[in-house]
View 1: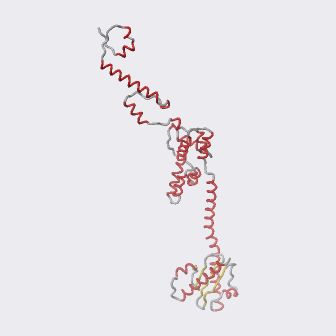
View 2 (view 1 turned 90 degrees about the vertical axis):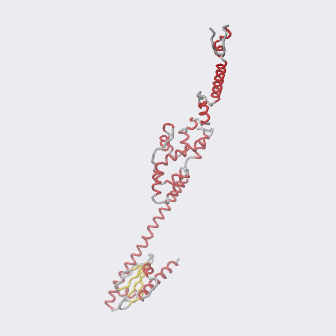
View 3 (view 1 turned 45 degrees about the vertical axis):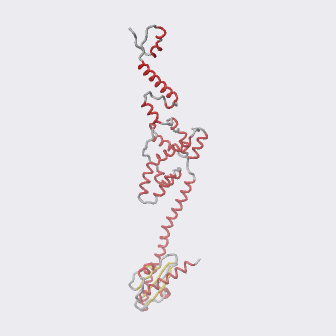
Length: 346
């Protein structure tokens, strides 16, 4: 009986040289075997040419070629990993604190966002970002700080995400700067220069905070300072009203000058207080008082009028129509003249 084998089978088994049995070759089977053998050889050569880090290319015909074409040139995972030494060199101050946070973010080999808290980023978001060289985020927080309510909301969000933002920033910078000098002295020095902190930021922040606090103190204390002396002027004016009534009982008319009230003994002026009798008669009077260290004058029209500030009188009488209004405006003018003369003194 005649055996039917391919030429490759005969070559592998050595049957061509050892047997004289006639062989019937199937041409179609031979051609198919040759193509199959050529296909396997080309795939094996392609695998041998691939980098060792990428591993051997699976044998899969057209599907394997498609996968290799789409994968492109991928950086080995070992080159993407960042050592603690590199992070420490880049972070600089308080590296151990941030490194503990970073370990949580890169757990399992893949970066993942986790909520953590950073008090410095919450309370001094702009200054913290500037200190850690996160200039884009410093600009964002600087703008948002001027928007009420929104600034607090974003400060809260920034406080919860600042550590992760800094982690991504550090990782991106390290991979960019690494090159072929991974963990070498020169490479770590480059990370320290590009990373770390801006040492001038805390000094600037303290100066700005000091100026701001001083401004707030001055803004609060100046009105209180003036109010103290203004209250003395008001109190002296009330005493003058009482003195006028007592003077009237003795003289059946109101005093025409401050000197008359002082001489009568019914009035004593505190130091720094100025007093003027604008007009007086048997029926009424107008008094003006002020303190040299105050910033407001006060007017009263007696005998039954209430004490008013000069600024209130000036605003209420824009176009005088009665003698009373004219007298009050004259009192305002006298005060303004005195105030201007005091202001011109060196």
